[in-house]
Length: 139
Image 1 (cartoon, rainbow, N blue to C red):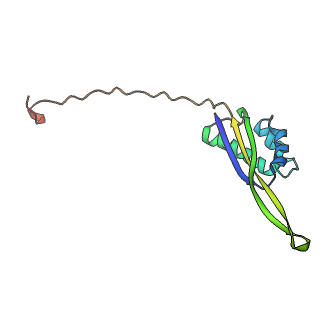
Image 2: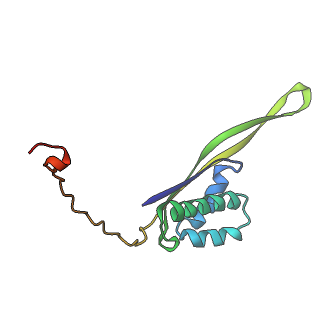
Image 3: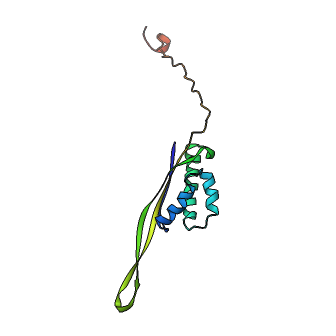
């Protein structure tokens, strides 16, 4: 069972996010969250939020056990680029590009063993129309 969580336009460049992702992609998601608490990179906080969101989706929506989850993929892509300008001499400007990134986390896990409720099929008997004077029919 796959579970996804996406965060878009994070105000950290994709290169910097990938540095942190390379550290956690071989771990289990629960251990990755613990490690991201102590990582001092700027990308660790938004990445931790996305991983925690994916874990919560797995628990609440699909009834998966947190310990059985693994990372299937973590994609880091380019987001929007905010363009700002800085004036310099002789009436010119230099542009400042503020790069953002998209984070997509896909978790994979085994379904929790839920108790299967056996549905009891009720015997459906075809009701026959009663015939006779007391029931208002001829016969």
